Image 1 (spheres, rainbow, N blue to C red):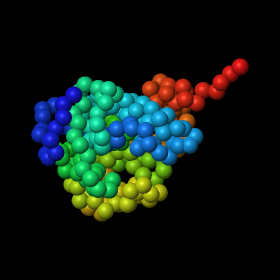
Image 2: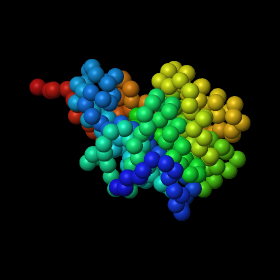
Image 3: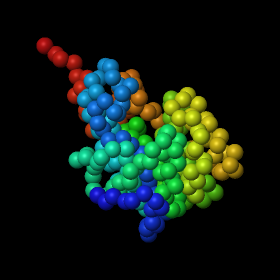
Length: 225
């Protein structure tokens, strides 16, 4: 593990794209609050930690120039080696996403911690050697109307600032912002964010081999006589 100061992240040799994960530390009462009820704050935090672990495992298995966790809070034992950490800035989510891109030199793809079903294969189109040929942006729509992934060949914070976040139209507004700027946009597969208990059940079923699914099963297992 290595931490970095705020500011431009230096380029490094290898594959062309930096892979960013924006996340909160899994602290009870501060993450996944829409899971309570039926889950307690502690259980919601354990689900959040499991989601983050699965996400970081996928990131480590994917080809990338840099792997950077943009974190609100302190890292814990869940953080694996090979992931750099930078602190999130203040402000709304649009400002925090914009700042994450502003800290990158060269192409960057950003994902969140809400899609533990993500795999290297799902990320592969935006991370391959030809990912930026005839393409300026990658967009991963979420089933709730938001987006789970955003890639920019030339990170421009202005493409995110002012986009209304956490609405049913966030993804449409963000994608329209990209095309209005004249960017050539390609789409990744649509994924479901884990926001509610129903989402958690569906995502666990879709990715049954991950830590998230195991933790979800442990927390929801019916008591049998």
